[in-house]
Image (tube, rainbow, N blue to C red):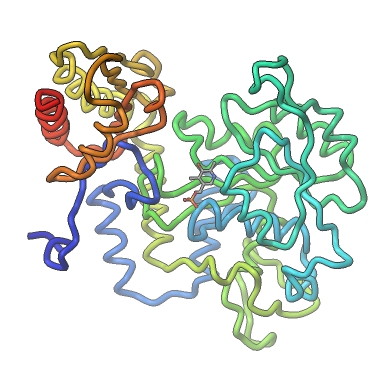
Length: 400
Ligand SMILES: *Cc1c(COP(=O)(O)O)cnc(C)c1O
């Protein structure tokens, strides 16, 4: 029995991908070993974050980096940094932003439930654009001039949710924001692979970019990191680190925190609930280094093998259609989709729920259920699990 079973908790097979609800993936033994070793010593957290900053800077090409408890936590820290700058008084007053720049501009089509993290800093969203391309009524989304129009003396930042489908381009958004001296925060939580995206948004001019540590990087589930401008990363760090220390005694690492730019020690900031442990930081760094060393091609090959085993097994199901996407492009995640017969008794949603309730419980992607399609993502599958998934689908399909 494993540690969960001993506590009466079922483990599951994850063919859905690294969802927070499903606890993310299974970490590499080298990452587990690093975390275990990290847990055996005490360190100064600011020093550890300063080291992380350099590792993240190397990997992303940004000036600095910072680790917190998830990409969402990083979005809160990023927003707070843009609102307060390096003013300890403002940091102490958040989320009360009266008298501060407290509006964040966002393209309406990019709104999503994770942006709660941005609003948590005490800012108000100013939405722009009418994305009629999604309604089938038109072809447009927001345009750069609309963002420029919305910028005022109250604008703390422009928030951009990176995605292949995101409009306008980040380059165009950065152009209008920077013309008005406004920083751009990018949510790139799930934008890996391709690995090139670690540098891309910084190269395109983003001031702060947030990535998840628990998705493709396969680090600790409760980690994420920021990369970007040194002054903004410093402002983020100051609102996250525990600074329960006398000013005279405080000697933060200058590459992360330039004490000379501060009029006093900030108190515990709005980011304090985004606390991250030394084990998580070391685990994230170890996973990030492995992610970079493996490269898109090898990683894609590993995922394709798992997904192909699934596809081969599902091909034999009568009346079903199996399709593969992302197999011929190393920058994508290979996905297997199973279209159930329209006239069958088993609907896609039935299959998703039946797989979930089986033993072992199998989680798949229900995004396309309304089209009669079940999707399988190999990112969190372990070797040998594809056969178990195929077997379960076959049994359920025969029974129906
Ligand atoms: C997953 C995700 C997040 C949150 O990332 P965590 O690391 O779980 O905090 C934020 N934004 C988007 C777009 C995401 O997909």
